[in-house]
Length: 193
Image 1 (cartoon, helix red, strand yellow):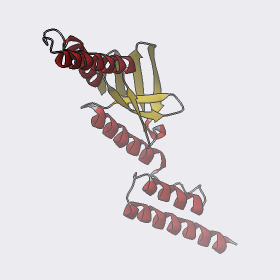
Image 2 (cartoon, rainbow, N blue to C red):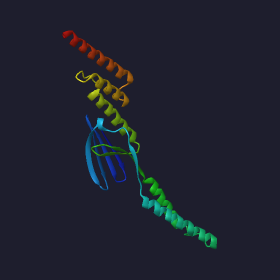
Image 3 (cartoon, rainbow, N blue to C red):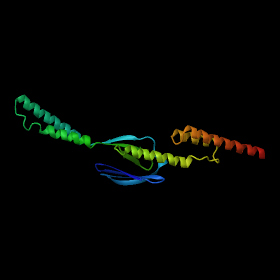
Image 4 (tube, rainbow, N blue to C red):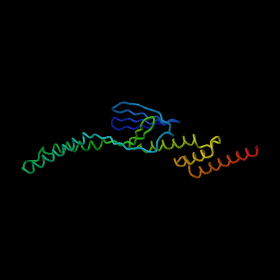
């Protein structure tokens, strides 16, 4: 499965492989890609806003200049023809500034930062990553490992609940199975001694 995002010169491609996510990006500064296990994807993200400050500042300056021209013409009783030119240009710059603003959710990982553009595909991408992360964590840690210490197994299942990978009821069932298996093993050892 592949989802692509594009905003201005930014191109992001999310390729959902069976065991890992490939994040590829291309922008004005270059291009790169990296792979990341779904289990290593962080829960929390930060917000970044990319905007053209120069365009905003020039727009404000031209609006002020246009407002001054119109005000001066009204004060001196001059005709208003052509006096609103700079105001018009300034407003165009401010509208362009607003339309080109780009928001990102940034997930910081050891492999690199994953930038998800906040557009109509944003929630679909995050949801797909979350679902695949839960499935991968269940495959890796969802089964009982009798070679682990009892406390470690209990901690593992509680950690899976805390990370919304399994429900509290599922974890309690696994913990009960582990406790039963460990008590059975302990009884067998005592019987042999």
